[in-house]
Amino acid sequence: MAGKRTTGVTIALTVFGLLAVAVLGWRLLVASDPSGATSAPAVPASRNPEGKAAPPAEASPPPAATPEPAAEEPAPEGDPVPALYLGDSLAMENQLVLTDLLRKTAAVRNAPYSGTTVCDYLESAKDRSLVPPQHKAAALVREEKPAVVVLQFWGNSWGYTPCMGSIKQGSEPYYERYAADTRALTAEIERAAADVGIARPKLVWVLQGPDPMTPDRIRRINGLYEKQAAEAGDLTADAGAAVSRSGDRYTHVQHLPCTRYERAHPEYCTGGDTTQLHRDDDYLHFCLAPTTTTPRPCPKRSPGILRYSKAIADAVGDHVRATRTA
Image (cartoon, rainbow, N blue to C red; front, side, top):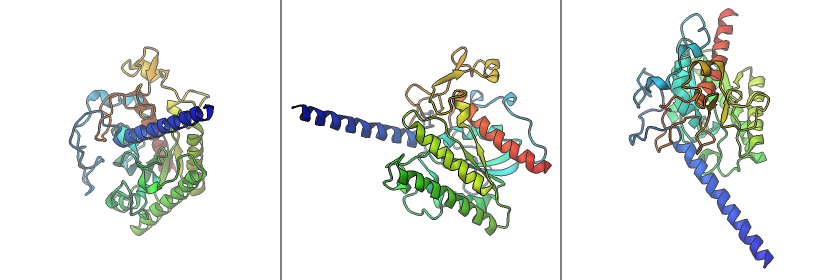
């Protein structure tokens, strides 16, 4: 009798776990569209596929969604450099804020796709990819000729990320595949730059914030990004640290004490002395508006998005300044 009860509990826990993964996977695919609009954007980018400047498919966010200039570092002297921003639903939700923060530093071509991972942007991954051929990393490098490529990947791997196959998230094959794919993507970008006769762009791997479900997975993923950047002479941007507790980098938090900037702008200090990073129903994303079914940039002022984006913008700005004073 006890054996039957144990078996029943085991089955129930297994079913619950599968449902949790399915729900989170759905959120990753549809996240960052708090608008509720039914029409999909023509291009998940700040330019259209032909590379011409164009407004986002959704109307520009309200002023509340745009960070004030006081949040920025002094812009490097000279014209903005061409840059690419590629990645998953976190890139999808923060792309407009990052583009605004970098407007004096880099002319950013955004091409994020929700639910994606590193292999989706490989030209060698022709099948089962969530990214169309014209928006693969190498294709965009040949088109845009960027000086900087920012790469934002949380580490997706499940049924919603087809190019990862059936690899279980957090398993040793998962980490081995991620390491191989970061090397492959770096090589494809380098070859694409050589194809069009430009200098190899500097890659900026974004280090991820805490994951309450698998905290060690994020630590290892960030370690892979740091290792790849070091070996290839590239950079990292520790955006995850900006949304973590000081001295406790990999423990997930929903609220943090307000920064000096947030205290000076109470609309960001959402809890009086604290700021809210995540909604109650979404521990991963930083957009404080409800998730709907069409992935789009977040239209609501969200402190976590500003913190995360500013860390990326600072890394890109520091690099551009360094290249101009070298």
